[in-house]
Amino acid sequence: MTGSEKILDEMLEKHGVKDDYARCVFFNWANEFNFDLNSSPKEKWAMDGNIVEYLFCQETKEMDLGFHFEFNFNDMFSHDMWLVKSKYHWVPVDYKKQRNTIHPAKENPFQIHGGNFCTLRDDKMDQMCREKLPLIVIDRDIDFKKRNNSRVLFFKEKFNWTEKDFKLKDSRHIIICAVDRLCQMREKKDQMIELKIPEEKNYARNGKFNGATMCFSMDAFHHIDITEHQKKS
Image (cartoon, one colour):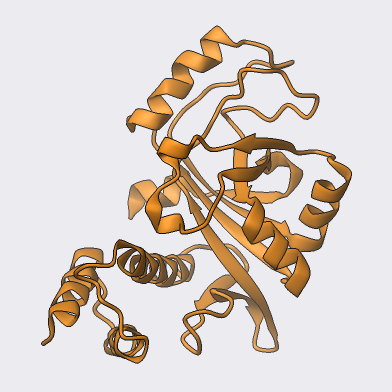
């Protein structure tokens, strides 16, 4: 094994990926694109992201959702997966894992707060709107024991501006967002707010990302609470 192949093997072991076909595809991608997982954090992050996407798809097959997701083994840089409702109903989907939430200090008319906060990068929105991607699924997995999220507990009490009180607790939701609606919201500045991630939190793995994000409430879209499933798994 090369150095990169050893690192990839360790990543797959860490995530518990045992399926031979999936492992073969990931190794082929690493070789095809000449990834240097030893010295390129961006390439390592990209590969890890694909592994997380694959695991999410496998996980949904164990849930009683009325649909599931299939990982896109065809192209590492195309859409991430398909939403599958039946043999003939496969919809291209991109995936985002969201582990952080924010409670805005300033009140907003759309009641976007720490309990429902979702965010997407502006540059990714540009691409999705331009290419007319049908759906994006957000895997919103919030753990308030993590440092960034623990601060939200304090912010909620300090900036208590919401119309209705809400509780902040560890939770995980699947949020299925129609991209055309997201694009309309963004264009009309409706049901969304704009926030910019501070430069010191704008990790190098994000390349040319300038920190600009579109933020909205998960209540604006169909969402499914899978917290209990996660506890069982």
